[in-house]
Image (cartoon, rainbow, N blue to C red):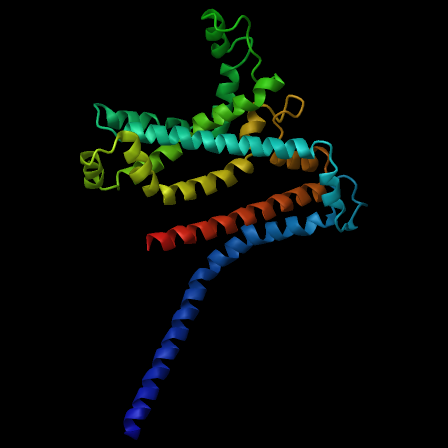
Length: 311
């Protein structure tokens, strides 16, 4: 009896030792990746938060030290802060909504049986593959009021009497960049939705059709609920991507005309690279980071809720 107890204790000790060695080995293997993430993400993020509460100026080096909330006050009291916040919301909400609707419609169409479907699926994904700078500059050229092909067609087809300055008119600038962003991004939604639709059992749809359910009933009662999970992931990712997007608007309008398309990321650029006030730029970056963190918490809870419903 005593011998069996010693054997059991020795076996447990060997198991614990093996687990310790496995954990140590795993940590050693992960150490390069952890160091890389620390240098690439943790340190820059910590530096931004530190600078948000410090006086940091690229030109006036005498301006330094602890700033408290002064940088945040500078941002909030900026005459363009409210306008840029509104522009960011408009840019994000309408872009993501348009991408979702167009992507869903495209997925529904490409999910049907017709000749040449594979070719359409390949070609429709091209806008997503085009680099943002190339897409922005191409559309900027096409929409040019002097020699752009869009204005040429609109005038010659007698749709408008004179060319429209899409990029230089306050009325058209934001809708135009939103339209171009939707054009470039909707294929990502479409391919994701299409993949999810093809995983839906056809027997389920056929049974609903036999029971008398129409096309719209089958879509809203069967197809759309099956896309809830993928929709949540795509919407969350693109809300973040779109709200912090800088290069697309910068390439097309640089935030103009008259701040009509300036969003918060462009405001950060203006403070850091034009006013050289890194502290204020870091404060605005920190504010956006906190907002994105809140969105992530909401997404995590919603994701957990959906997982519990599926289980």
